[in-house]
Length: 156
Image (cartoon, rainbow, N blue to C red; front, top):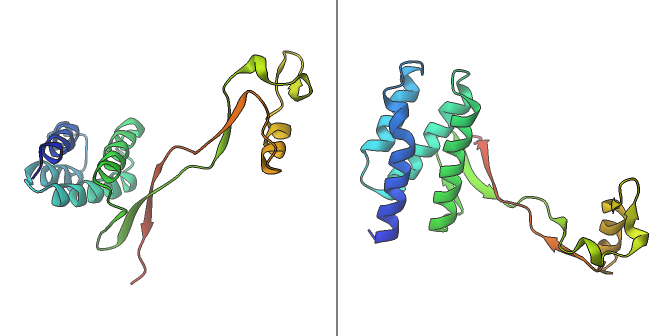
């Protein structure tokens, strides 16, 4: 295993370690966290983390911040390893790109016709329409959305 893989495995273990002994969590979630922490193989750890994400999503006792942390770690692992997806027994975990959006890069460069008042702010709908017509607006740029994690049940 490469040094980068070892570092990623360590980060995965570090994020789940506090869940193992958290008595407020159901036993199946603690067991899933222990499985992640106990593996020495990166792929096995990623699959165990994916299982943990599914269990956390189904558990109302898991805080939203814990769910977000687990999902963020799994997204990082998938992204850093270049894995397109993980197939579990009943689910497939994959990454998806967020929706493209327009970002203001230089507010002063945007022509007045694309500013609304009060206060003077960019009219993002008009700017987006211009971009869709392949007519860029000065002071703006197209950006890809942030990647996010998708958990979907597999059909048998």
